[in-house]
Length: 201
Image 1: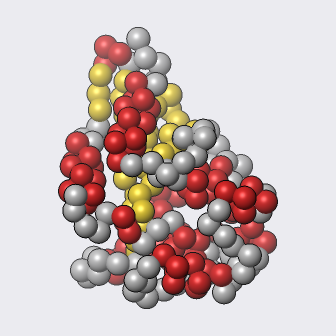
Image 2: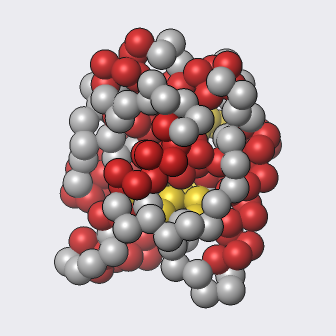
């Protein structure tokens, strides 16, 4: 019989999400971040990790999704199918399993939430490089590399030491989602909503 863990399992698609959420562990207690050895995953790998988390008895599984790779089919269709598959909570009472799987999207990628530590934007970024250029105006040393993620001694702390604020990032992300309701399909992040969920767990 599975044992229910009233804790969040956070699944990212690559090293950026892994190292960022590791840096938040002092703020949000009881986080489990996977995979332990970060690499860029595909949707098949992500579904495998979701199934493992369900079987391990986690009560919440939060999937961090970069939408810049989901703009076109077949990746987009596969993602929407995966999201629909876990739209309802998973209940397996005999195995002691009760789990909600949620997806939190950012367009183009998680670096937009990092930029929201410093300022709001609704600018259309045609590629990841232009977004990184805007982020580097505030944190010039930032690099999307495992070496940098290790050297900076925690991404969250690095952003705040350079004048950023997680509270601002949450507020800006939520503002982007309010604007998205007016049919904007770019430059938005659901990570503000995720942070609020983590706080309330």
